[in-house]
Amino acid sequence: MTGSAGVMALVLAETVAGSAMFLWLTPLWREVKRGYFTLTGVILTIVAFAAWRSAAAGAIAGDTAGAWSVRLTLASLIVTAVWTALQLLKQNPAARGVGFVSVPVAVAPLVAMAATGRQHEAIALFELVAGAALLGSVLDGLLLGHWYLTDRGLSRTPIERATRIMLVAVVVDAVAVIAGGFGGVGSTRAFNPLLTAGALAPWIALGMVGATALIAVMVKATLRGTRASAVQSATGFFYLAVVTALTAEVAVKVRFLPG
Image (cartoon, rainbow, N blue to C red; front, side):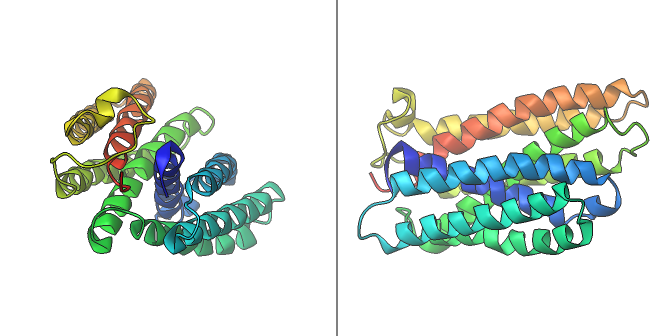
């Protein structure tokens, strides 16, 4: 894959994979009302569609890894759309079953995309999984924060867990950014010139990861308050975390693909 479309395919596929992991592999199913899964499913279906179209636009003719990236992002879109449709039809047990299946299907594109990177596949896959953990944690945390407005009786456990996951994710993602190196490499020039100037992109990414870490600490501190407004304040911080995390991933993924 190549170009800005290829970079966005990486970031969007990370978002779908990370969100699916935290949505289905945590105890959320037993904690929140099913409407939360419907809301998240609709959003992830849109993101998965964008990931598929971006992968198709960024694919290079004759590149096997790129072709598999397109096929697997399409598979992820289909499975995500199926469990979302089942949620809309209130077929909760079936939706849950397909939802579990969607996790490995959503991770599969990352495996294919790792082979399109400039680095060794193992390192590239680590960078993609780390990015998925970061983006998935901030998106799920943001949606959870809004869900507290509709479910006043929901305990703090889900959003506190999402915050802890985000704290761990920023550390892992910082390691991934460092693993990518800081030397000048070929990169797509379809983004802001700051991201392609010399070796500036990884430093921008590391700074944004650090900013996300600071926000995660502030969310954790905010949630120590007992008032309902504490969750609203935490949600505001999650908004900022989505911006900083996305900026970090776009910045570092500009260097992921060969120039």
